[in-house]
Length: 213
Image 1: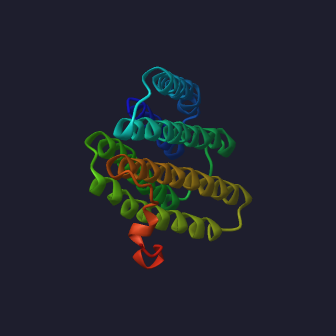
Image 2: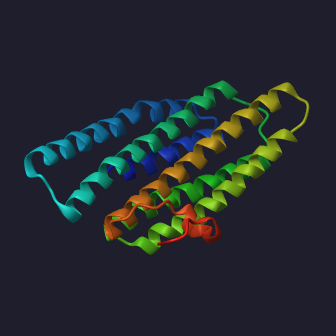
C-alpha cells in the first residue's frame, strides 16, 4: 500500500491548487502522477509474477486478487487528482471565486483525505469494521458534492463566475470519485477477510440488500 501516501500528497497539492489557483503546483501534480502510475505497474507485474511462480492458494490467493483491484483504484485516485489540477489553468489566475464553494470543496477534500488514509489502514490491519465505516464517510462527501452543485447553479449571471462555478462542480466530482475508490478498497479488505465479495452499499442500506439463503 506504499502508493497511498503518494495519493495523499497528490490530493493535498491538488486541493491547494484549487484554493489558491496555483498553476505551478498544478503542474507538479500532473508531472508526479507518473510516479503513481509507475508504482501501479510495479505492483501489477509483481502480482502476475507471483501467480506464475508461486501458485498461491486460499487466503493468499484472495490477497493477491485484492491487490490487483486495490492498485487499480489507487491509480484512479491519482488520475482524479490530475483532473483537478488540470482544471486550475482553465479557471485563470484570478477567477471570481465564491467563498462558500471553496469552503465546501475544502471540507470534501479533508473528508476524502481521511478516507484515503483509512482505507489503507483497514487493509493493512484486515479491519472490516474500519473498512465499512468508509461508507458513512462517503455519504458525507456525497452530501457536500450536492451542495457544491446547487451553489454553483445559484452563483449568478456573470459569465466568468459561472464558468468558474462549473469548474468547481467538476473538481467536486473528482473528489467524490476519490472517496468512491476508497470505499472500493474497503470492499476488497472485507473480501480478503471473509472470502465473500459484497458491495458495502448493501450494508449501509439493509432494506436494499438481497435476501440471504
